[in-house]
Image (cartoon, rainbow, N blue to C red; front, side, top):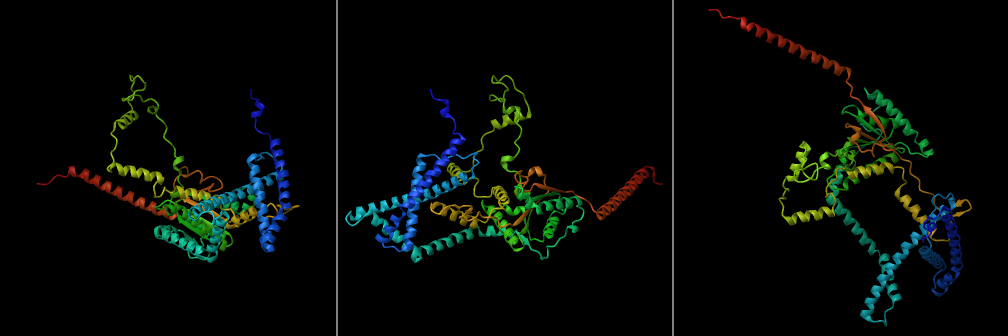
Length: 523
């Protein structure tokens, strides 16, 4: 009988002990690899005749590759330690470094294995053609590497790659360029000093409550550093809800004027494009333009999306499904009985519709059978077709962009991560010397403060909840419809005039109708 204790999950103490043993084994393997490095240096420098600099570089690469091979072999037999719940920060940091090293050398050894397979195939072809006298595997590998280095050194390969890039971009611009340009043309940017920039908060009349709420929201935006210092995330957006003509766009421009920052606007219909993927490009271009203007004008920018309901409606998976009826559970036989025996029938409207739909003939396609089958294959290859998916991809990209505003630039992140990865994979340069780190610090964001303002005139429950949640557009400001005094006076005078005309017309008609029977013609 199997002991139930043998089936138990490994305890936290066992995982911690395994991690400590891994640390000891890794340090011992690194020490042995460093001890054997002089032999590799002597072989490269004396036997191969390389210079001291190239010999040192080749020695470091060889020792690191051998150390990585040992690590990969040991990982095949010894499992990774699970440090969930461990409070030792040093163990966790070493575990991250070890996993990064294993991934790095696993990639290069797989690439080397693929190269060895290609060289072997070429070697077999040469053996079949020329025999084994003048052909060797190492000679084939050296000739192939020499040809590759010659192609890289002469520049012909780079010219071909550059030419291929130009052809790719040219074909894309010919086919998709006009559509992309039409979408980008709807993005308008207003910088401080433009003719349509400079609306003040006092210029917005009749929305006192909305302006007070906006002042509170702006104070939260300006206090974002305190939220980040406390471990939270700053507010990034606000949603304007109100009927058309209530001053939503004007108030958004007033906010940009108050910040003394640029203002980027786009209608919600600008994200609706013909082909799938162009709406995503429009979103990325919108944020890129906002970041460029923010970097130009002190790190702040306002993005205003008018009629955001065109892109931010509730997604299809979140739509409210109709409540099931009795016929969905009790519908038996060709006549739709309530029981399996078929002797109880309840005639309702839903029963009739279900029965008619069941007895209706299947619609026949006007196209031949091969065309229908070909269309089904195309639809399977391209889900949803080539045409736009109703703005769902644009909404998904917009949600991701709003969460990723605080991310560091991609080039800076890639450079920092790759350089630290190479230093970790060398096994020679330590990660820390006492309390000082020998790695590049983590990439930090540029500090651009980009705020999103959306405006719509539909109920908020029709928008996607992922868009209106806190952190994105979690602050909601309602704009009630108000009549000005002049409009109310003019409407009152107009209504009084209409009432007077109707009254006088009614009275004259009544007088004529009463007087007509009394009138008698004279003879």
